[in-house]
Amino acid sequence: MIREATRPLDKTNQNKEVALYAQIFDRIRQWIRMGKIKEGEMLPSERELAEIFDVSRVPVREALKVLEFVGVVQNIRGKGVFVKKITVDNIVGNIDFVMMNPKHTALDLFEVRSGIEVQAAYLAAERRNDDDLAALSQALKFTEMINEGIDNVLNPSLDFHAAVIAASHNTAISEINQFLADWLSCIRQQFIQSTPLSDRGLKDHQAIYERIKDKDAIGASLLMQEHLSRSKLRMIESMVDEGKRNE
Image (cartoon, rainbow, N blue to C red; front, side):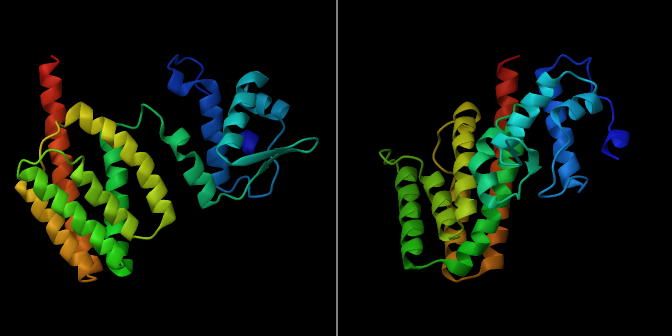
């Protein structure tokens, strides 16, 4: 069934992103997602996969190594390669490897992080405790200090967003966000100058804080979504300006 449904690989494109092993990796991952090979079942052998894809064993072997690295399969010596149960630990533990791909643009990553932060704001309003409120309040004070010209406080805006994530009390969200925050910190340095948070941005933070304090989950998530939408527009404008300067 797998053999009959397999399309030929693209062997003409020299782009490294569509290298043979990467294509094989994607095809096997699709089989698993579509249920053609289920949890606990054995993959075709290395020789059989080479025949199915009409390639040598080398790219097959590389694809299987990557699948094992990211926790999708397990190679049991003397038996074969089996599909593993996918857990949150598998995903979080290897998200940096999977996401480090030039095909993912700055905006792609920003949108992923936005989705996480909107959900985090919702959960924070439901689960926050006194320590969380104190951390959010402190981040707001730091932001106000920056806007008043006191420049010895670092990244107050990022501190506020980190405090919202922490207040969600969701380990997976915290770990995934940490990875994305590292990427976006580099992006901010490249596209967005280190200027004080705008008055509108500060008011957004204050409003989000009040919704979380009042345990208004829907209100907090909606305000976070609006706030991040405006931040996205700022990023796009900065990218356009950067592009014009480089022309």
